[in-house]
Amino acid sequence: MSLAWVVMQKDLRLAWRNRTAWLSAGAFATISVLIYSFAFDLATRDVRPLLPGVLWTTFLFAGVFAAGQSFQHEADEGTFDAVLLSPASPTAIFFGKAASNLIALLVIECSQLVLATILFNTALISAELLAIVFVGTVGYVSLTTLLSIMGSRVRSRAVLLPVLSMPLLIPLLIGAVRATGASLGIEAGTAPWMLLLAVFALWSTLISALLFPVAVER
Amino acid sequence: MTALALRLLNLRWTVLPPATGIAMMAMIVGALVAAPREIIEGEVQRLMYIHVPSAIATYGAFFITFVASIMVLWKRDMRWDALARGSAQVGVLFTALVLLSGAIWGRPIWGVYWTWDARLTTTLILFLIYSAYLLARAISDSTDEQAARYAAVIGIVGFLDVPLIQMSVRWWRTLHPQPIIFTTKPALPGEMLIVLLIGFVAVFLLAAWLISLSTETERLHQRLAGVRAGVDRHEGA
Amino acid sequence: MDNIEYLFAGFAVVWACIFIYLLLLQGRLRSLQNEIERLEERLEEADRASARQLGFKRVRQDGTPPGDTR
Image (cartoon, rainbow over all chains, first blue to last red; front, side, top):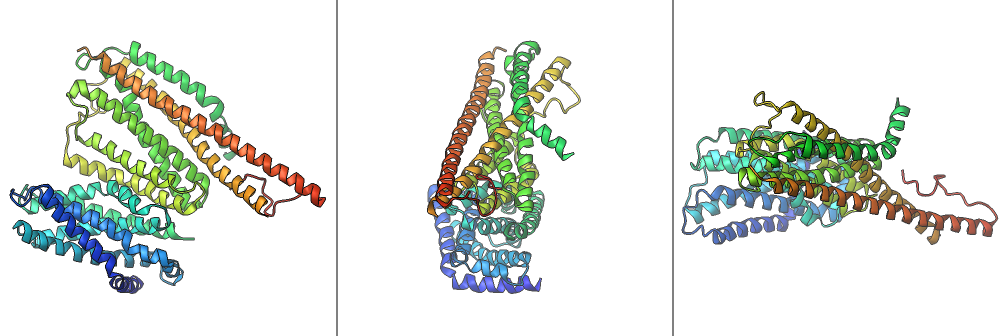
């Protein structure tokens, strides 16, 4: 556990040094929200029914994009092999990596929530919504982290990563969009969707943490 | 025990093709001639005898991919990778067949080719996941162990994702009638059940044969890469 | 209800897909086998040539038969 902490601190430092990658992910998310506003003409309509979908497609695409970017640097430099040779267990490495990705993504997502609050005149900063965003992000970050690390040596990974991860993340997308909609008052009851999100988050974290050591071991 | 298993495995080239052919013929005759005409849905209901077994065969093929993927990570043996790829290919083929025959069946009965109901959507998502799996595996060399492990991770995660997909999609939308054989009433009449069983046998034999063929193709790809490397070494030396 | 054309369409599509896949697989199998045979022959010929040249039979270092990739 403490090793995971150390790895996470190292990864966060790395993320900070490599902040252009994360900034580009944030810029990508911003552009995506703006593009949706033009495409669906969100300026004039009652936007609330569309907002959950807009937010979560943005989060997912930005998250997948960022996961690929965040690891690219280490893959290119070959520093990841060195990390694997260090005394830290692969599980600790994985959790450190996933946690640092999670923190960076949460920052991006909160900024998007603020942006959307301003743009669409809808209060999006509530404790419930933040909880949904947190659980949902935990749900996808471990899978995208696993797939981006595994795929870092495979050709044309930039296209491959979204094509591979999106179908796997459909249950999460459904749960997150419905929960967000419920918390915005579009439909009744967040509880079942929160349950789905929580189950998915638990499932993806567990399976990624179990598969990662086996998959990278040499 | 293993010797017996190997012997049985070697029978697949001599036994499977004729057995598959006979069973498929029996299935066609049964479906088109022997089975009674369904009163409400009419002739098109005869598609059931290939649609339902194909749907089950899909899950069987993906289960084989799942097990073979575990073995790839565990044993580090590329032969398992060939099996995983081969059966994923056949699984994707059968998902496509299920979607196509389902769409053609749905048109006269539901009035639409496609609806976003739980079963259909789950099948579509499975099709997407395993197409992506095949894509990921196809763009790297057949002997690339990194790529094989990457694909294995997807093979495992994808299969374990199935219950979650089913749950989420069922909550999301539901229209599809419950499959008739699993409900107590109205039970499927005897003749229909027999033809359906023949359909199961035929489709499973077909799937086994196709998986053997596609796995063999992948094995030959790997062997070819080995031989090529040998020639290169030789001529380079 | 008369919808027999859908029945035939369904069966035709399914059979067509299965047969196309079978033919593709058979074709690929055959071409792969031919390619492997061709290369192995070339390898053997080269082996024989070098054996004549050096006066002994060339043995591959790892001792595996040619083409074994396990």
